[in-house]
Every structure is written in structure tokens, then in C-alpha cells.
Length: 414
Image 1: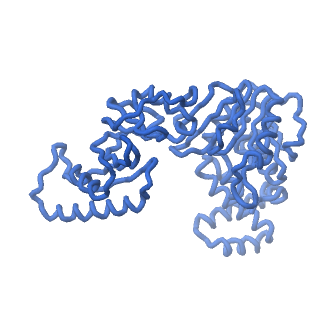
Image 2: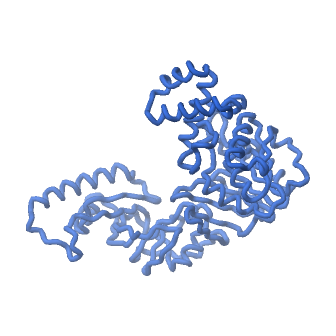
Image 3: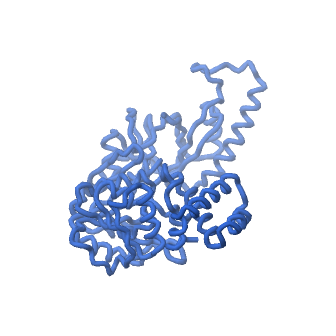
């Protein structure tokens, strides 16, 4: 349940801080939530106990995103919706030099905290509880002088004259779940574009799966991945635009930029190396740009696997050395894996109808049984590299190549 403004006010008192610490200790000790709530209720009443428990749960949910989550203010819902700090700091850099940034739809203030490092921030949300959380988080970071948090309707808000930049995060969920239609977001995409048109630079957080046709002419579309997972997409407008398309991987923070794919990359059979592209590259439609950088070609049009004969290091792709490839047949695939000395396999796919998890289980079960049989024959020779044959961890990539469904056997190069 969300924390209300009066809940936050209580949690900011010495008694509220004490009982929140006790709640966090109880969760760490795996105390049953109902038992913990009852214990706290006897100390501070139902409302105070509930607020303390929700804060403790929120801080635990926020811990993977914020190094100082233990002193910030979240409930579980706002923590789950909050932008990870590493992502927020990346996007906030676009606002360096602004007179004042309006963070519209600030939630619990995750982006506000990062924006405050670039410029003074006016943080606005229509939920009084979220506004209270933002103010509390600003205070926890010592940013009171950089952040003003106010309750208001983003669509009806008249921005102060000193605001020359906006960051908009429209609500993309309703009571029924995720909302896919941008015109049903709150505020709608067209409304956020109208607001953005009134300032010199703006960023609009959108769903990573957004139809790129919805991006207005002249906008930059950036897709951001964190630890290999696509987490955010942003429409940049006005002076914030730096390229037509951008793919960013965090960490380390490298970006790939350029024009959208135009079918320039050739298509061919697998070579010596396979490149599994970061999801930001495909969504940003920058496969042509990366392929040229890697000296690579596509295995199949519109499938984000590249191949090359020379190895190149890249933060935008995982590289595998190809051992073999063959038209897909589970029986033949297992035979080749044994020939390659595989003890275990990981299966991935792009544009393949085969379910990877069941196949991976079957292959690993068969390889384990094969290894057990081999263990009964100690006279087996060791491989040239000194590894007992059958000790390798290999990857199977299921995809399309040479106009057919294939399995590529490869070894990850780290």
C-alpha cells in the first residue's frame, strides 16, 4: 500500500524513525509481517505500525537501486517504480546548465535526486504522498535548497518563468495494469509533447516497447539497458537532442549513436564468431552502425545476431567463438555437443520457435548421463588444453541462418 503524506510526517519524527528501524530489523530477521505489525502496533498504534512496516518493505525493495536506500523514503510500490540511481544520473546529465528543471510526475523523487545534481528542481506530482516522499528524500540527501516538491496536476500546471527544461514521466499503468496506448498514459504522449514544446530542452520517459512511429520529427530516441536488461526509453527534444538514435549500456555508460537501420548490413552464414547484441541496440535500430564497427554481417534480416571472422571487443554485444552450426535437430545437436566436449549448455534463441528452457533441461540431462558413463572409463585421454573431454560449458544459439532454422554451438569469450 502507498504511504500517505501524514505517514511520511510521522516517519520523519524521532519516534517514527525508531519504529522504522525496528521494522527493518524484524524483516531482516524474517519475522512474519503480521506478527511484526502486531508487535509494532502495540508500541505506536495501527497507523504508525503500518507506516513503519511499509517503509521498511520499501527500503528493502529499493536497496538494489540505491546505495543509501536504508536512509531514503519509499513504500514498496514507489520503490519498484523508481528509476535506478545509475540510470537517473545518466539521463540527468542532459540538463546540466539549465536554470531550473521541472520533474513532472516525480513519484518518490528518484529522478529528482539525480536532476538536483545538474540544476535546481521543481518536483511535481498529483499524489500528496509521493510529494511528501520526494521532499523527505531530498532532505535525506541534503538537497532541500535544490528541490521544491509541490502537489499539482501536471497537465494544468503553469510552469514558472525560470523553468527552461522539463523531465516528464507519464503514468503508464492504470487499475487494469500496463497501458500500451501512449494516448492513454497520464498525461498522454501528445500532452507531454505539448508541455515539452514550451521549454528549450526536455526528456520524456516512455515505455521501452513504444512504437517508434510515435516519436515526433526531430526527436532523439534513446534506449538504455542496465546490466544487459532494457530498462528505459527516452524521447529527447529541443536542445537535449544529440543524435537521431542512441543505445546506451550501463554500466559502463557507453553509447552508440547514428541514423536508424536502413538495410545496409549484408547477410551471410555463420563465421568464426557470433555476437549477441545488447537489447538497446536492436530497439534503437542501430544494428547497421554496430555491424560496421565490428566488421560483421547479419545471419538473417531483422534478427539481432551478427557474425564475423575477426574478434572485436564491444560493450554492445556478447562475443562467442563458434564451434559448429547445423540445421536444427535435437538428436544431431546432442551428438555434436558430445563431440565438442560439452558438460553443460546454456540455450538462447532469436527468431526460433523452440522453447529454450525445456530443451536446455533435456540436453543437460543427457550430457550429465554421458559424463557419468565416461567417468567409468579412466583411460580416457585428456584434451590438448588439459581439460578432461566433457568438461566444457558451451552455448547453443537457436536462430535462422542460410534460410533455415539452425543451432549454433559456441563458447562465450569473456
